[in-house]
Amino acid sequence: MQLHELTALEQAHALRCGQFSSEELVRHYLDRVALYNPQLHAFSHVAQRSALKQARHADQALRKLKGDEGPLFLGVPTGIKDLVPTRGQPTRLGSRAYRYMISPSDGAVAGYIYAGGFISLGKLTTSEFGVLPTTEPEIHPPTRNPWDQARTPGGSSGGSGAAVAAGLLPLAHGSDGGGSVRIPSALCHLYGFKPSLSLLGNLHGKYNQLGLSVMGPLTRTVADAAGMLDVMARHPSKQSSTNSCLAACEQALSPLKIALLTDSTVGDVDEEILNAVHDVAHVLEGMGHTVEPIAPADASLEEFLPVWQFAVSGVPALSEKLLMPVTRWLRESGKKLPFEQVERIRQSMAQKVHNQLAEFDICLSPTVPIPAPLVGDYDDPSNPRHWFEQCAPLGAFTAPFNLTHGPAASLPGGLTSSGLPIGVQLAGHPGADHLVLALSTKLEEALGWRATTCRLFG
Image (cartoon, rainbow, N blue to C red; front, side, top):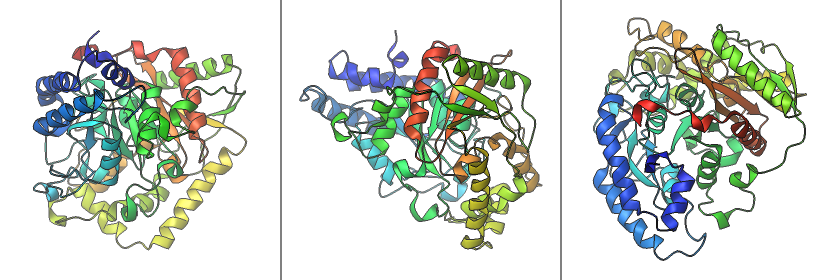
């Protein structure tokens, strides 16, 4: 087994046991980045010198550890999404408006990731300001899906999804304001977890007044995701939390009442994806859970639009004229909207979801209603509204749980007949993160998705 075939937790354990060094592991991944990133454009910046320096420091620390002491992921590589300021490295937010920006300090989540022992190999690509569910900003070539390089890995955390799927990283974080962790996870055959707003808190601060956006992991296993959640929740070691996400993965489950949602008010669902969701429903029933179909909540893209416009308008821009047409269009309208009005809309839409799921523990649905679109499918610079309306249905099943501030995970649900990944979503009520993780673990065992990997990248 090659080093990149190990999970992040397996790598962390092997490092503690002295099976290889952090510098060896980092060099292995840097070699893969050098080989494959020119095709995929998952990294917008590779910090080779810094990563190797961090690895050597990690090796010194590892030699002094005893047992489970120290950070959970000491010496394990990852990357930082380019929406997060990273000291001494470019922080471009996927935008030409920030093309010369070098951050003087680390953003909060970067600090937490470093405290967890991770070594950053560089910055991971994003759509401009995280606005779109694809990763095709003007500042660099489009990020491509390792499963089919003609297609998008999704967005806005497309660099994270592509890097993990291609084995350029064992795991990565993303941010999720309408599906930006779960959409790339679904399109790249990964596990992606969007936590409740309450689990990690508002890591975006004043730029996230509506609380839509949270940070979450994109991984190949549920346990890796849980470990990274613990790190981002400021519990960098096994000893630092008695109520950890990692421990939650092992909790026993009583029979659950699960809502099955397979219809959307903003577009049709691909038949093969529907079949995959029904297959998972049958597995859940075999576990002793009750699954009942429900109708979609009465909501529309037009109703959601001002919420997204307001959220996007809060990001500071050094030059509006350098922004992409779709970003400018969203921001122009969003800046005219008062917070109180938009928050009322968010609460109203969230209440519809709460009412719809009031008698259920979990909601099962597709993550994304269609397989990965082709790169450039939605680009329409002459008509930014049409551009947004064309790609917005990718978030039809994900965005409702940003409105509610509840947890949601995308699980690998198999492949289409043409070999493209399918994502299946499990979502819960606000605060039910541990329940979603525990159920995800049971499904991981039943579905065996780790055996399905992107063979194109070894």
